[in-house]
Image 1 (cartoon, rainbow, N blue to C red):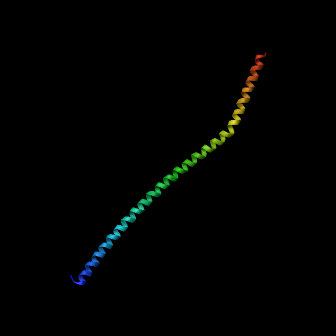
Image 2: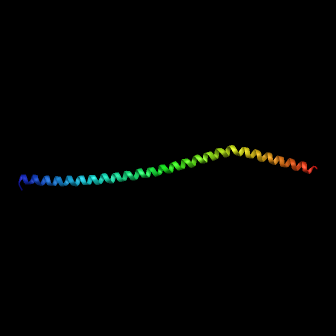
Image 3: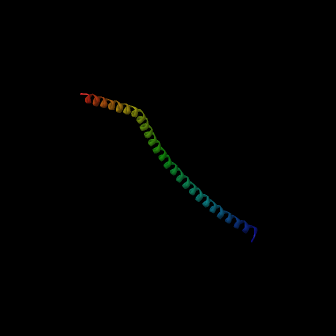
Length: 95
């Protein structure tokens, strides 16, 4: 093989390897983009779950606050009603 033929073969092989390399790089890039897209979707789903939990937590906090405020009022009213009932029962007994 002459030097010229060797150089031609090297160019052809280099071109083929370059084309194959570009193909491999293209495949790798597409694969990487697919993986990134999947991760972004997964993060978005997790973000939706976190938002839903935050809404539920907010509702629980509001309920807790309303309960904490309302309970003493209800207890006081119940005690007052019970005292009134006992007072009325006692005055009814003395008749």
